[in-house]
Length: 194
Image (cartoon, rainbow, N blue to C red; front, side, top):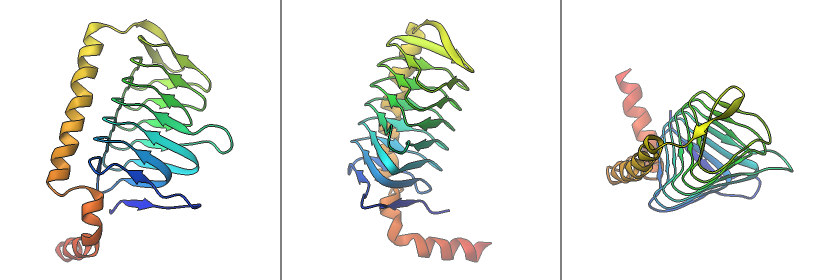
C-alpha cells in the first residue's frame, strides 16, 4: 500500500522538511506538521472539513486516525506530544508534552493539558478536560492520580526517541515524499514477486 499527501477543498498539507511521513500514511487537506514530527505507518491525518495542526517533535504512532468536526472543532496537537499506536483523535486539543496511550480515544471538544496523560485503551468523552499534570484512565476516563516521576521519565524518553528515529528513517530515504516518484516502480517489483 502506498500512502498519499493530498490536497482537497483548496487546501494542501504543509509539512516541515525534516518531519517524517511513513510510506503508508495518508495526510489530507488543511494540515500543518511541524519540525521533526513523525507520522508513522497506516496513520490517517484528514483535515478535509476543518484544520489539523501538529507541532514540532510530536509523534503520531502506527494506525492512528486524526480527524476534525465540521463547523466546530479542528484538531490541535502541540509540541513533544506522544500519540500511541491505534488511537482515535477527533476534533480536540492535545497540548504540549502530553501523552496519549495506545488505543485511546479522544473525542470532540476535549482538551488534554500540558504534561497530562491518558492511559492506553481509555475513552475521553466529548468536552472533557484533563488538567495539566494529571493521569486519567478508563472508559469513560476518570482521574486516577497525579502524573508520577515514572510517567515523566517515560514521556521524556519516548518523544525525543521518536524525533531521532524519524530522522533516521528520513535519512534512509523512507519518507513518503522521497518514495512518491518511485511508487510505480516499487509496485511493479513487488507485484512481480507475488
